[in-house]
Figure 1: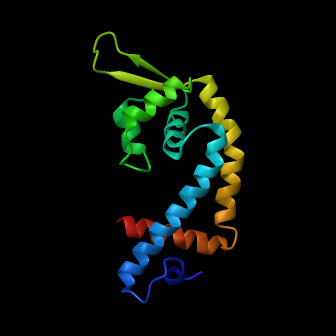
Figure 2: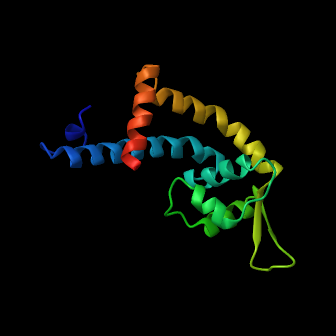
Length: 149
């Protein structure tokens, strides 16, 4: 579907059209991810935090590290971590020598939840690109990297 049809708009300058197209597509992917995650009781930003912590391979991370690796920089990392602690999916440990230093790590329960989520998320990701050739996928990734600068 053309973006003009999706947003019920007339012709627009190329820059605006491209930006709207990217945002519209990103929101559609985000909405599908949220649908998948809802039965598991977590949001896409919480899922992102869990994936970041799993990527630490057992090493704890601080809030700053998590924040800089977040997909959405607008996320309130402290609040996200607090909610994940309440759910028993992550732990927070305050350093004895420096009370301002806080380390966060994923729990076994968090790792178990991610292993349950991996398959449906991976299927969704494959479904997103199913109509693209491997060359088109590579080209799209290169174009998106150029856009981000």
